[in-house]
Length: 401
Image (tube, rainbow, N blue to C red; front, side, top):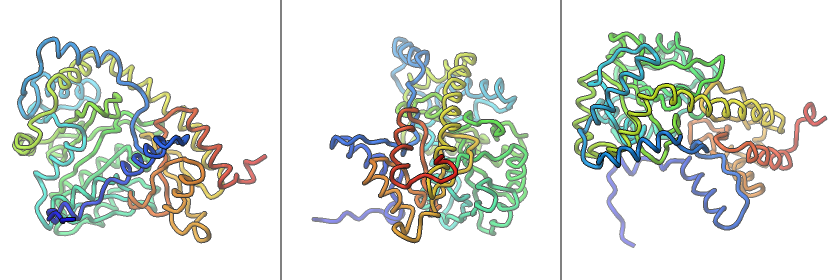
């Protein structure tokens, strides 16, 4: 079999561990097994009907042609107006660029900023794609371990990790995989720390609205302009409105950065689908319906979280803090290691092989000894998973009675 000379920077990239785990679950399901898939962070809700209706409306209007690479004027204006109404954020439509999902937003931002050899600060645990973006750009990933602060990044940690080559910090709050939320005051301090040193911040806000008290919904787009000039907000409709397959997102950044991203995108995806842009613009314009749809999903996620975390903590060897956002439980299984299980991957494999319950190994997120459980699934699936795992690992005595 002939070999293909894959470009070095692509060859160095790792495949997505979350998607790999999801593919394993799909393969087992095709074989007829009763699989509980707690891997990929994909909402189990359908896209709200009013957004589907807007997409059909766009098709009926003939919105099936090219748009500007930055996105339709109606789309960029809707993003700007929505953030102003929701957060009091002040930025122009010219600082908004539509993208084909949050991933392209992140790649656009990084590829237009980073040069080979630049340092990129990435807090651990991290979303699996962040280091691979740095690798693709031939930059260096510099990891910040946040376990000492319960996985909540601090300005002091950022300051201590900076080098003369630091160009960018990537933040994800609410966090995938930990579910932790950086408090607004600390987020501002982090960005002030970066701005003082001329370091840019790429903040992935795809879980922006999924924060549970005491966690607070906060966007860096609401910061004063002198700080926002150092920030690129990557937003997405995938989680917020259960639109993962629609592939629509956006960036909010200073006009120079935005123009660079438009230039790059004009040679790659050109722009996201025209009638999808229209549907999202109309959804943001219908502020009341949008907020209601998000709140309904948020309430259900919170109900699942409130049941799942105590249930996980009742299983022997499992320890999990209460996440304040997103829809993930990040479970510490290090108490199980040392005997039958040498790594968290071994624990995940046992769950897969003996209970057909599929989760994602924390090593892919830079956190060996942890497992990520997605609770973007039904309560029935969560109950079944806990029952199976309780039989496999046993239950803690205090909860057994």
